[in-house]
Structures are given as C-alpha cells and as structure tokens.
Length: 77
Image (cartoon, one colour):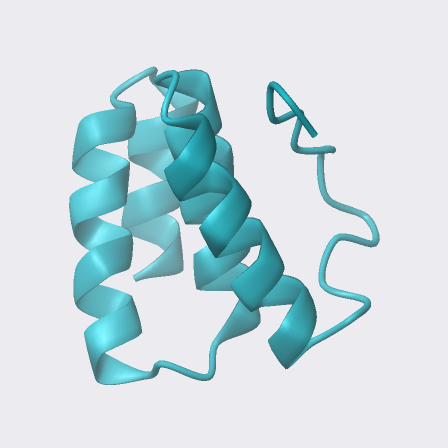
C-alpha cells in the first residue's frame, strides 16, 4: 500500500494515492501513516476538512506519526 500511494503522490497523482490509501485503511484501520499520507494528499487537493480529519486520526493512533515526515499544512488550522 505505502509504495503505491507514495509513488503516485510523488508523481502528483494525489487522487490515485487517496484511492490506494483508502484501500489500505480498509485493510488496516490502525496504520497511522496511511491516514497521515492521505491527509497530505487531501490537503494538496484542497480538501481541508478531509485533511484535518485524517491528520487528527493519524495523531490519535500515533502521536509521533509526523516525526520525520513532511508537515501537513491545512488551511484554517
């Protein structure tokens, strides 16, 4: 899951990254990085509410999830 999602996001295909992360989250809803990466893609696409929800879910699962990862900037937060 993470390789596919990461590679599609790197190439700018955030919609496909979100689809891959959706599938991964269905398989393992406790994988905090999936929520973190999906939040980053949603933020890039302008889905501030979705990004904030995913970022909060990631941090709830693992308060240190963002360490070593790019910051997620969500408008209005």
